[in-house]
Length: 312
Image (tube, rainbow, N blue to C red; front, side):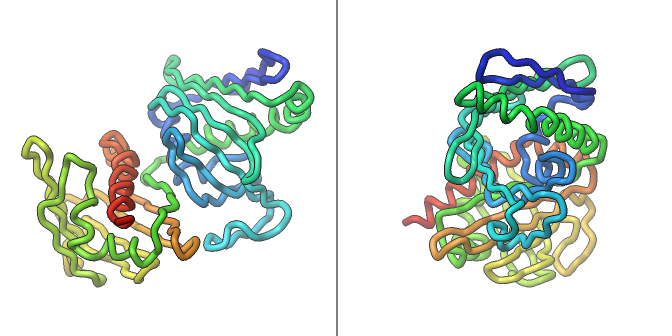
């Protein structure tokens, strides 16, 4: 399909686009870091995310790389002049209905965007309005925004035709990397925050080595129990932690594999840590089930609990 472009007011341009994919998948493609990184931006462009928190008041901070630019994921803010800093600040997030945000560089807001999501026939109708400070700025931006939007939507459509197995996000936490690592790897520190309240971790085993056990017993407010036994695959202190319930401790095969989790840490400063979480599944259906359980909302709530504990 192609864009329908209109100009509702002297400072606005509006894009209407039908996407031949279910609304849930289109929404997730707009709100999950691992998916956005695979299609956001016109053909030939790519992005590196510094942080992403899709909640009112949250922000998505990233660099857009022009064609042919090589990147170092551990130092995404240097490089050539064809790297473009972008900062999206979310103002309104209505699940599977609407996103409202300001968009600019790291230094200034350049325009505002509202995108609505509606089921239509066998797919999804996206309605996006960009509002700029003046007609002159709108007209200048339209010269590249109109073809750029069409190219970006084409990439989205191509991406949505592929299977999707991963959920992910990146956040910058107000805590030093050593404390964040300990919160993930010391039993007494992990138990108070690891699941969103009113759920709680009532038992936990951490054998912090490749092949070692990582077990959490979570209990819900109505007595529900969720007992998860996993096996650590990678343990790189203060840098990377990977575990899977596709294997039991000692690398023994599991009878009901669900997902593999990877947490990567990078010290942004002495008091800030960039955390990237990736959860990988065997198939799209399992991934979709996990998304419906509330990922990444539940992870964000849990991380808020962790940061609050580390602040004391």
